[in-house]
Image 1 (cartoon, rainbow, N blue to C red):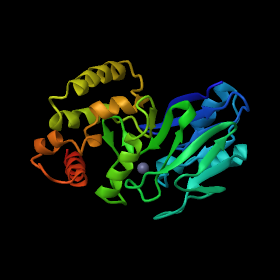
Image 2: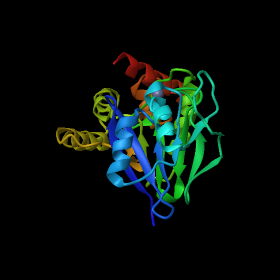
Image 3: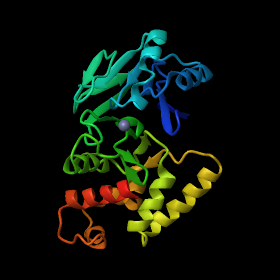
Image 4: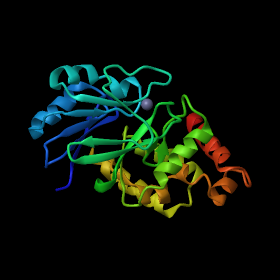
Length: 255
Ligand SMILES: [Zn+2]
């Protein structure tokens, strides 16, 4: 039996996620933006929260931990603290560790850049990655604590996952990301097709997530900073991929 994954909005533009193991009934929340919608989703399914897998320390990812832990006595798994402490943690994880949610297994990828502590959880058997604020559909997270080469290296780790991997990211930013992407990647037919699909989905108030690694490799310019055509389009022919990535990220910051 394969895992069941539920996605629901939290706060203004975050996504909450539950992953449920039908064999053992274990259920993990990926991050905890706020407790109420997570509790509501659990009650709707008749599931009990056993684990919270934390990706990074930002308040819109950890704000619900205390209330959920008090209510469910669940285990809290989180990366090692770097710039800011994460409270209520039971297990600390690092690159290469495996986290079990019942009979499901998640591999920990360190994906720093947005924050220094940022990790992603890869459920290989489920073809799913929870990458929070590292990789978005048609975009990537802001680089607050790390460096551009660090963030580029993190994106390369995610890009190396199989094309059929479903990407569950931390926010619904796709439509805004596409507006920017069309300013630097306007001739990309796959991007234009995705733009039309996203416009349809958002008009119906439907999520644009999950997306797929293979789809993002074609449409997300932030994953193509090592493409000579992207560098040339930015006037950066011959520059390193990390420099091209940095220029893309800075243009997006100013957009
Ligand atoms: Zn964040």
